[in-house]
Length: 450
Image (cartoon, rainbow, N blue to C red):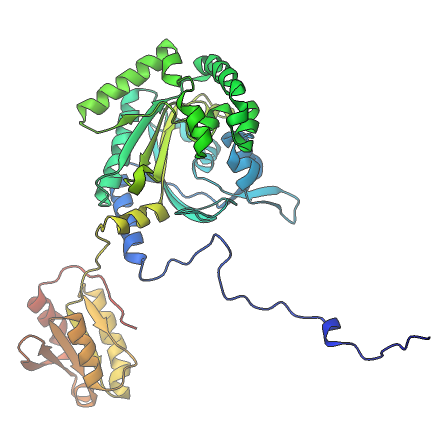
């Protein structure tokens, strides 16, 4: 029986435009206004302590050549093997979204000849990093870090200062019960013998390890010690410890560091299984853990020495140390322990206007108030004077400046004391001096109420 051809196309055959998805990608998030006071607190404290410890701001690109990270971080690390966002540009360059900040800072240090600067050279960096990892508590595919790096000094006193800075940073955020864990993983010389000993032990326990850790025995055995799987943690608990197999130089370095920390009265715990997840670490490594429930502290940040990284990347032999904190985890911990967020200064003056002519003049008046360092709030666009005064009362300003049709024509402004209700009319050209005298303000943070 012949099959009749349907000349009309079905709806399913018609091409469809991609629908607009009004949500963030998995592992990405918006930082909403309600959370910004916590983020602002982290930014302000980090920048202030960076100045106090003489760290200079360095900003590097989000996109770099992919091999910058594969060579510096390590081919066998989880970041390079599974978590990097890599792609080809139209010019066929293989690039990656940065998964961390230190590698880019090292590239910048070499590229711009900063080895000629007085040592140590200290950098403070902050910004987003990207890891295509399974989203989990406090870990997003796009997340933000605050990073401190210091180049050119191998004395353990710098290790102590960096650890002191990390401790002070977290304490100043209001996280008073965070725990500092420290270890030494040795240098390339003593770590070679330790790795052989560790691999022999892990081989004997291979059947008890997770699939990733079985693979790590060949590529990055130290990472087995850092695995969060329960069965791997049990194996790691009885593994040989790096601190027992340090060369004389590494042993003396670690011993001196601990003496400095004791002198500072800085609390710490030696964790012999702490290794960190990047290949470039040498000698000192440390991590800051939250005091979370059930004894499972969440990592808030960490770091250590990377004395050979600059040389591996093509620069001269340069000792270095640094650390990073994760902003999302810090903010979550601040909320958990009820630490105080940043509190913006309150405006002391509110500018109210009534009528079209007054609206035009009020823009210029607002600009003059702002330029003269007077805390000023406004509610441009609100119609009635009553509704504007409600906003002024809610903001608890000391004075409201009222500009209406009559005042605009007369070149005057009404100054209303919000506490007493008393009003006085003053000439517009004397207003700035009068307001300054009344509120005794020297500085301004302008507040816009929209």
